[in-house]
Image (cartoon, rainbow, N blue to C red; front, side):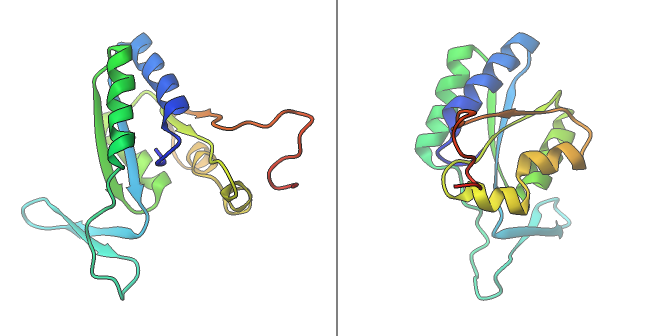
Length: 154
């Protein structure tokens, strides 16, 4: 989940979880950090991508978004777990889904100026649909009409 885009994606995911009699795992990934292995106690070894940075604490989901996750899940009557992972978001989502043997992965589209970069660099949703075996449901978070220019055409 991306900070700030939660409501539409969470409503769809929670409604599906309720219909399937399942819970939700809300995953956010900090791409500025990488997991480089495990210690003998099983804890992850986390390193920053930028060698000039000493911070190895992943950026957690903002408290307002975490509260929204819990509110929407409770409104649909489904249990939810919020997880923060590190590394590439597509890989993190796929790994979390594998760990839980998830039925599907629900993601949203990006909004704003980053849509153009996403088109050229590849979206998390597009990468997931080609690089792992689970179904991926993409929830539009700020769609344009068919008569409007696409973000990369503007």
